Length: 428
Image 1 (spheres, one colour):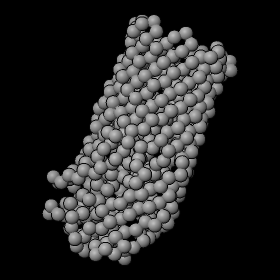
Image 2 (cartoon, one colour; image 1 turned 180 degrees about the vertical axis):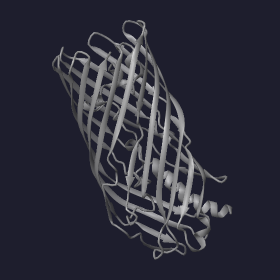
Image 3 (tube, helix red, strand yellow; image 1 turned 60 degrees about the vertical axis):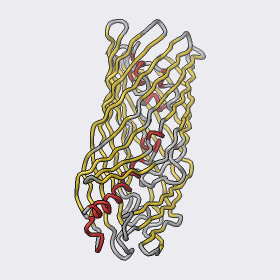
Image 4 (cartoon, one colour; image 1 turned 30 degrees about the horizontal axis):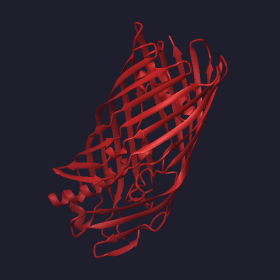
């Protein structure tokens, strides 16, 4: 029975591995409409409840404030076969077959966010924010050439952050936050039977769970210059759920099962530095650098029935940077724009079709309109240019048995994305 469990688990770990191998793409920056409008170039140094995700110190000097926003994310992409193969027992290697191109596998979505804060006496403030920092969904046809790597992938997270901030001196603010994050995932990929003549099997891993982390930050405010720094902790995730394996035929049929399973992985720490400099009474320049500790995402461990497989990821830390500007046309209207470069932490070999990632440039514009003395509306649009890249993976199914089968995925990827965002801020 243990051999059959290993047969099934080998397909499950392939699914789990690919689901998180998306780097910057499964981390969503869209946590502030104002931030989107200047390409996330000054959030850690800006004040107000809308910057809570980047810096818990942002509310130390703000009034009672509520923010709600949503960003629609649309991605156009194409994945083309570049010689993918499958090798069956006995060394017979054949083209994987099926659809040789996949169009728009990354599903469009909406990233909502909410935050509220209130001062306590003259020097303290508390806040609560709700974000969706790691969300994506991709779908491929059952006949698509990357089917042994990915069919359907869905990852959803909800992050609740309770924040406390303090005005330490006339120029220095400090803040801390406690994060509770709920994760829900469903991952599917095809399993090869022992001949391309036979229909594929299917494996699905689904699970959910709560995990916890923290964030800390500070801001320094001078006559025309504001500086900000923050650190968001890495978070260990361990969603529990169910593994399903079905459709295996012949000698593999004993591997079909439904059983409890647990996955373990870590999302990265994020260190952010930024500045805002007011050149004139109307024009402010913004700059921000973020360092992502993606090397924390070293392995994925999947456990079912006492059997555990650890899959190496080989991710590397990355640094993104953005610059932007805010221009106050008048007391009722502020315009902004920015550009950001965000590299991928995924290795060139090992990149998955789950959510194919690449280096990217982001170009953005935005505006804030003051509707009343207490209410402001934010709007933003950004264009994301994904540098052409490739997917390249080798996965072995049923390893250590006479049925060991190896799929080699080779494909090229190109695409672009669009973000349209709107938000509302009000003081009370």
